[in-house]
Length: 481
Image (cartoon, rainbow, N blue to C red):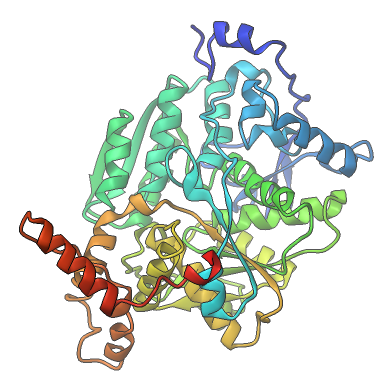
């Protein structure tokens, strides 16, 4: 069986396979604008050492008709071909493509749900509030949409080893796609600063995992040195192929909205590759004519990992202000984000904002999203917490349409969730005895700790009756009547 996503027998059963368009992409420096046909191992410009992005003249070709693209993409949703079953490769006309489909590594990523948020709508006062849940991808995070593209090109280039520095989600995704594509994977994670749930995924997918006595930024610096000296392919979001795959989040979202752009899209901010990818997709879709106006793209960070917030407020986005990152939202615990310049450009191009939220605000928003019946990991919850601030500031109006991008699954960090509901989450933090203690008390109604009972029917019935008397009806109960 070839090292591809499907076997020869599967292909025969699926019938004729779709063909890939001819590869015509190149690499463009985001700083000096120089264009090259190939990229170095560290994916940096040979002229000015800035990051690269991918460009393709075919994306601006007059033959690329918006109506035809929409029709083709819609038809592919009923296809059983391997490429079409992927919510990334279904949009291949706007992606860099490999030489042959045999190189494509896919786990049927993308195709993630789009939810209404009635409870959060009432809390924020925003009447049309939705979530695009990327935590429903195969490994539980948005990383999969970029990893399918980047791992495909690693495989095409003949690499045996791929590697990443990670706060958790990247390592899980990379290890899965490496295993699927017949490659080995090396994971560099900061010791003691990663969710065990995420790390367990990488271990199970067969990754060689190194816990380094440093933070994420230290892991990334070491990885950059490694790829210059060893035949190892880097799969962090510095790799522009990652961002191309992550563009499809925005394409799929607009398709789910029948190509009517929302007023706002709000995303978490960590290493800032995802916000950069979404912004790039929005600009490309407008240029092609898929959409007629741009949504405002806003980024929300944790107060303890607010490098982009400070960069925009203190340096007007002209130089990065790094921070010593500290937050329980581990997926965005990054103090020296690699894609900060790309993020600044897309925020400015779309007229978006950048905000920060506290640990208590994150915990509260996470519980409120959980009460919607969908849940998310802590980093995703900064979107709802940030929306509340943007509404109070008047940046977001109550009659506007807002989409929150939830980047990770609830099961990515069960320790956070359990500590929250047991009331242990902030025991070792300076919330108690500070002005934030009152803010922390707001969390109590959202907590649902487990109750230990004797194994008798009476005990269960009495507990049920007490809950019936003391607890208010579920906030979404009105919509069920």
